[in-house]
Length: 200
Image (cartoon, rainbow, N blue to C red; front, side):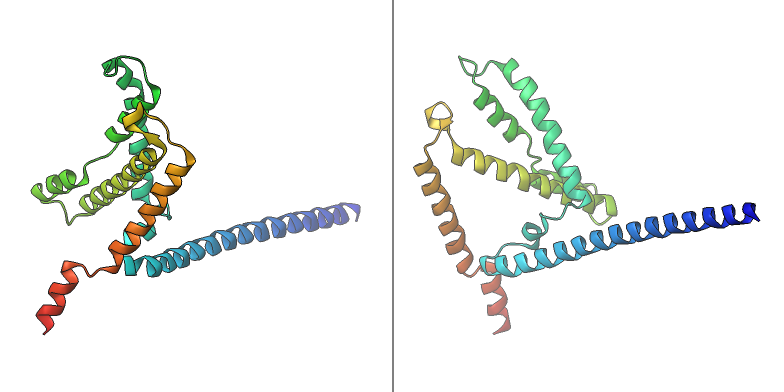
């Protein structure tokens, strides 16, 4: 009888542990699903905000870590590290300048996606899965490297030995960039005007 009571107690303990583990896994899955739906909602909302400024959907989708974005970021990072290691060996500036070496490494980390797209098109693999993947990863890579170059140009002054700009100049350049982006997005693009002229 004692044996049956001990087995019953062990069974109840195992059942409680299983219930706890299942509820923990379900809660984890629910949190991941909520996060995914939140990111999708955030991307669509950001796209609605950026659409009047003629920004493509890839800008708003860049906050989701897609496979292409992961490949692009890892490619930019590895090229950046290799560039940082090899640029000092070129002895381009007369005096060693770490900021200059970092800037050159960031510039080298871009993929030149127009050239990559042309190569994929010439090989006639643009409509295959791998072709679309490579082109999308190249565009993401260019987006990341161009963003890093723009941020670096705002922070460092290339005409003054890559010294830091003062906060007044950084604020002025950032505000001018925002104003330029808003004004550029307000105008009608030539593609929209062409489409409207064909309708009439």
